[in-house]
Amino acid sequence: MRPVTHGDIAATARVLMVTPQDARPEVLRAIITDAQRADRYRRLWSRVHPALGNGTLMAAALRHDPGPEPAAGDPAYLAAMLMVIETLLDLHTHRCPP
Image 1: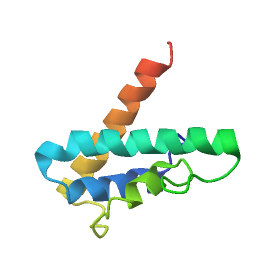
Image 2: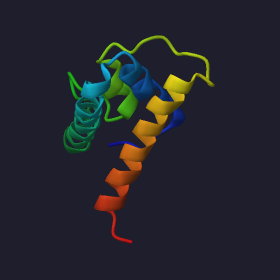
Image 3: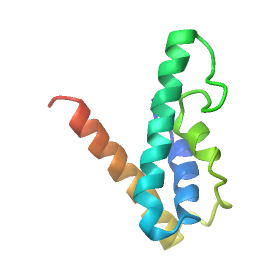
């Protein structure tokens, strides 16, 4: 997966906000997996994956029809962003030795 930006987190959080609460972990995992696959494809073939995008989290998220961007202080939006950030931190912690 390409380096994560604020836009990646925001786009993914917008997807989570329109996803039922109980399905959010599965959808988030799918978005991250798609971004990882697309990035591997991009590095291997030197071109964008035809279906999964360029390897960014945003490209993978936008395939899931995110809702509109809410106000930055919206508690539900902040919670969705927190879920994305915690998942990415967990992924980083378990993949990179201390």
